[in-house]
Length: 295
Image 1 (cartoon, rainbow, N blue to C red):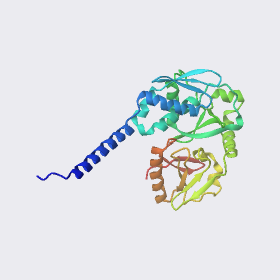
Image 2 (cartoon, rainbow, N blue to C red; image 1 turned 120 degrees about the vertical axis):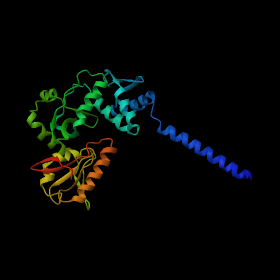
Image 3 (cartoon, rainbow, N blue to C red; image 1 turned 45 degrees about the vertical axis):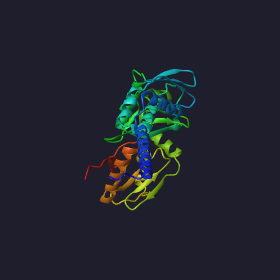
Image 4 (cartoon, rainbow, N blue to C red; image 1 turned 180 degrees about the horizontal axis):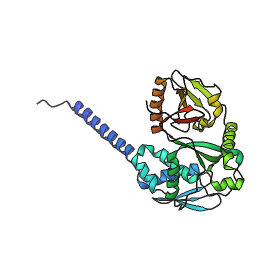
């Protein structure tokens, strides 16, 4: 058997080395974070969520948070880390979700600015997830959210949204500022209409995209004027997808191609977005959105 030329042997050896190095890099890139690494990443994310607070890593499973007033609290990372391990690609989404659960109930008794109270559309799982994340940081009795049912899949929660933080309301908040429960939806929707920039409708061949500020697109479901003014034209009744808080897609009930495309996009966006809601579609009839049955 004829031996290979020395130059070819050297070239093959170089290729093997490159492949080995590339394989090591890939394996390191896709290796899940250790508890210590996860704690460092989580602490970094929480510092962004809670500006002005000090966040220290107390142990691999615990963070110590000291707010601007010097009050200390502890956040336990077991549930967040377990969720991350189920899908390591969702690191940012997991950190965002559990950080939000901590930030949304800061224990601050400062008065609520009623002019900043807004409605936020969430999926029903969110209510349970927030309670779980609060228990994970040691809360024995998480505060009760003020919310309304929107339909089978979605709820409307209420929050004070100011430039530095977001605070979800409890029944005690409403009592303290003297807002009747029956007046809350109207007040919140009116505030959001005032706070949002101009709403834009971008029509396409199969569906339209409705844009606001990149945070409250899903809450536009509550703006009756959008759905009764003729601003958006569709064939049949309105059919919408809100796969994430910043996505609102619209087509008509007599547009099967549009509905099929919305189902495809909703499934993809709900799966990939850090702020996902639902992959279900909803149809607007008799002044409300209900789930569109599979076709």
